[in-house]
Image (tube, rainbow, N blue to C red; front, side):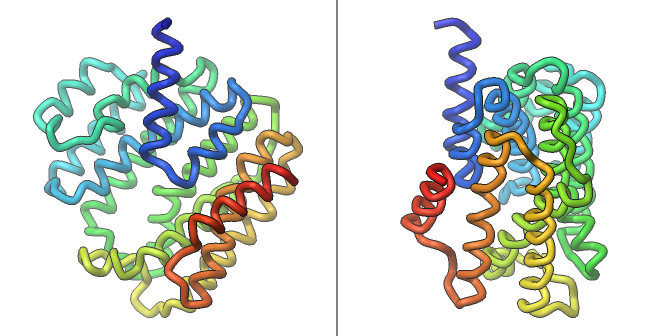
Length: 272
């Protein structure tokens, strides 16, 4: 087995282990797009695991995120990254330790855009670690959701443009990411509260967050209208449909949608 084939298998294994939402739609992409989106997702997941680490001190998180951000801006020196994380290797998950592999897997011509978005995300995450994720205003919420999810939309739009000149609206792309994130915030509200984290602005009720999620998912629906490539449409529709159905379930008092509903939604989209 060649090193390239071996790495591709490792990428898909890691993707399956780290993402319930994106594994299936990424797997359905055509080879060149699949390779690109998979590597981009894992790059962002690598830094996300630092931000979300439950045992790591905030100061260490900020140091790792800011230093990684700088490395990503400067062609990503593998040795420098391994030196950076070496003192914390036992604490970090495989997806973070192997960031260099995910970077190397990303095709030339788009890798710089992926690294740029990931760098901005890492810097923004470091700032929010410093604030202990305490969101006071809607502006705070918009900023936080931009860094952790809106940038995913921006990066995907860069990939679509590179792949076949698909042009999408930047604000709608950010709304796509924000909508998915807002649904996650609603779904995880109690769990976040248990660990002392609050993503709701001070004066907001759950209904206010429902409205925020709905408004951004509406932008996501508009975002889809600019995309004509069937394979890209298929990819984007799956997470969006799951977010809409989850939001509907949450409004009706359910904790989440069932595995059966997830599978039925995916099958419906694939076969439509």
